[in-house]
Image 1 (spheres, rainbow, N blue to C red):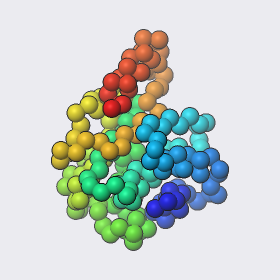
Image 2: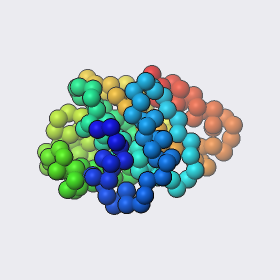
Image 3: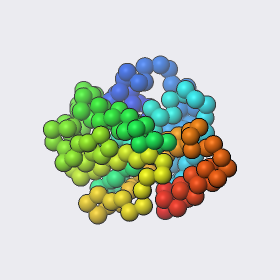
Length: 179
């Protein structure tokens, strides 16, 4: 419960096969710090930020000490990229023997909803994939608002071409993502 890296190695050993760099420990320590309500991770490309956050989403859903239903919204620059992150999570839930050993089966067969943009597990927890600019405000599943919102690489060369476009992105994040 207290070690996201160890959890990742157990449920997704093919993603966590190299020695863990110190920056991963720093990031996961910040992710687990419940006093931090907003966290912006800025780190070089290629250090597996998305892989860490993917495992953290599963940690939030299955190992969080907070009781009750959880709803996670994953946002990326496009919905296609957010869906790719959701697909990685879906594959772990559906096929990982380590995940199944820890939590039993919660995959596609028993899920209430299993789509490429939304999964609602048998216990009511949900993961939703959205692209930058898509509606996030008002999202709820079973009367539960998001308990975790992950914004992974929300900007690209298409939505940062002008100052106006970047200001639009910032306004969208401030008005739709932040509570």
